[in-house]
Image 1 (cartoon, rainbow, N blue to C red):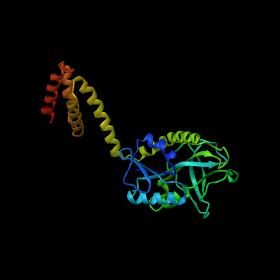
Image 2: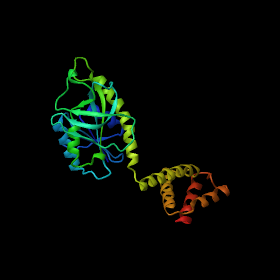
Image 3: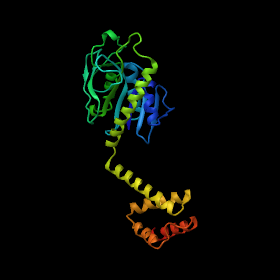
Image 4: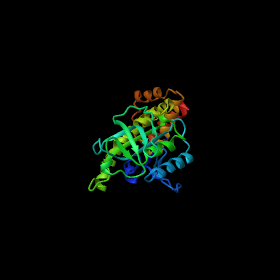
Length: 280
């Protein structure tokens, strides 16, 4: 599972759409969206240190992570160095209040700029922005997350939306547009992480299911299968592959005899019954 934490819904909505995340009603303090099949859970924390830390603690307690799980803090930031729209992976986090620094490991190859981010408990003004990145949550997310995750299990991906608070610095529409574009690039990276976390057994399972689906589609068309017959055929092919049954030889024989493709659905059903009796 990849647990994503965003301060604002406008930062999260691109990922919610991409992964078809559904709102989980059982969470009372934070908005939580999930898709178990995709292995994604996203929490909208609200802005600031306390909200971010509380969200990480609550969600990590409700859904305790294991050694394969990841935490991703995705959101917006200000910068006096990087242009609007730049997506950066943070390799150093500084808590401006305490001066403490934290160094998440970055175990995956990526196409982003790596840089430091400074987290402050207040919105930075444009005149105080010098270089690097600035936000209000990253350091708090790391400190709360470190109770549940190792440094190699936490990633901080930030999109530059502004250069601090200033008159006319950015509009709400522009902010949403920048974050949606950043979410698309972030999702490509998330997909690579998900693929890395798939075990060898899971990969073999997926490959088998793809093979069976392709065979069932091709053979089902030749047998003129109804929806019910198609489902039965898929299950049979899946079983025969698992049990290493030589079903391909029997199907080849039907082709040589001219019985495949079948003349109609009735003949196809007859062949399917013969395959069941002969191979089960």
